[in-house]
Length: 117
Image (cartoon, rainbow, N blue to C red):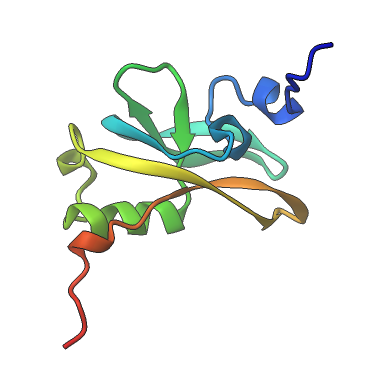
């Protein structure tokens, strides 16, 4: 009996990473490029920031939350300075776009945050 199960979002999101692809694990990747792409959404075509990574063809459609965390972790808001830097992705369960699902979040690097004095 085959106990492996494949979530439909994994099949639908082959080009773009989705939370279910992480299967409860963290994934550390090196940023190759950050640029905008025109993507189809429920509201029509929209320009979204997309991060590509070394060693994989899969991309991450980056929301503002993830972009802010990357800027904090890497200590720079300039995306061209993110190239070659590593980030760690994790999946979080919650209500996103009106549905219960997993979303990818960039893990905050707590070692780079100033401790309270």
